[in-house]
Structures are given as structure tokens and as C-alpha cells.
Length: 223
Image 1 (cartoon, rainbow, N blue to C red):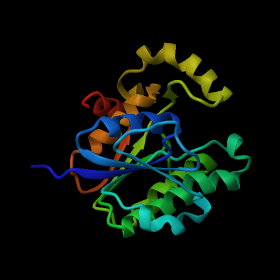
Image 2: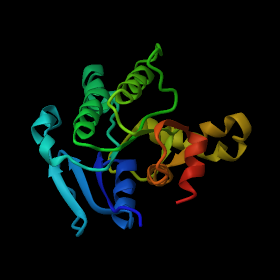
Image 3: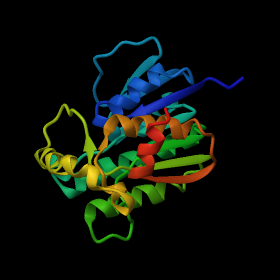
Image 4: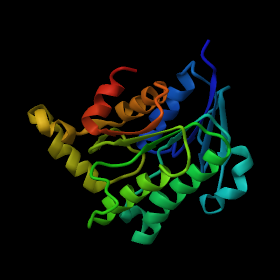
């Protein structure tokens, strides 16, 4: 009989994170879901435990951040963060600190949303930060690390992102033309990414696994 597990999710107020939380709560695989965030979610569920934290002082909450599988959906934009330094803090520092704490508390798997083009050696700041985050979480000693690199995310956001909304309007009609090598550039539904996170976690694969957007779409369709 499969062991019922504890899940921890960070970033459940975001586009992917909201869907991820929804599916974690529905999943028979998890008996408890711990949501870590800066503000309380307007949601009550018998499996859900909410931890309101200051990510700048995350270590002070370490004793309550134990779980088997960690789903990290933290992320922002440079425009919303206000500066490159603030962006780096959210997309690298907070993610890495969460990885360090949960690894030390015995988490087996870390499943994280990154971005297409992530590369620690990139000259593009955004891609470089994402690549450094990927590199650093792999060094924390998890049994498995699952890194998802989606293309443009589709879905209803609670926040207004003009650039992404414009890109979505342009790219979505072109999706049917993106086949073969271009398939990984197709816009992808945020819920599909969330489903792929849960599917990847359920496979019990050890080591590091990186999924490009076309593979994410395939995994998400299996859940």
C-alpha cells in the first residue's frame, strides 16, 4: 500500500500555484497540504494548513515546514518586484532558502516551476537567475528534483500583466502552427503545468529531471 504523504506548496496565490493547490487538495496521495505564503488564502479545507510567513525570515519558521514533497511556484517579474535585486530575492533567494530548509527537514522531492531558457550562464538576466536557481536547488540533497520550464503561461491571473497578456493574444492563435521543433514554444495552460507537477512527483524517480514545455504538456495530460 502506497504511503500517504504530506505536501508543502509555496506560491499558491499565483497562476500555477493556485491550480497546483487545488489538485493537491483533491489528490488521495496527500493527507495534508501545507501552504506557505505571505497572506492567508480565502480557502478552508480539512487537508489544508496555512502558514503565513515572512520570506525574509523563512528560517524562523523551519520547524513547521516539514513535508515529503515540496511544490514551489514562487515567482514574480522585474516590473512587479521593482528592481533586479528584488526580483532575484523572490526567484532565487526565497526558492533556495525554501529548498535548504525542507531538505534539512527530510523532504524527498522538490518540484519547482522555472522558465524556458533558464541558463546560469545566460547573458539575459531573467534566464540567468532562473538557471542559477535550478543549479543551486540541485545541490541540496533531495532524492529527486523536478524542474519545469514552461513557455508562455495561459490562464486567468488575479494580477494584471500587460506584456504577458499581449504576448498571449499574439501567440495563442499561432499555437496550431507550432509543430515539431517549435512545439516547446507553444503557450501552455497554467493548470496543465500544475498537473504535470503532481504527475512528476508521483513517479518516484530519483535524480534531477528537467521538463521542457512540450513535455510538460504531455505529462499534464496524464493526470
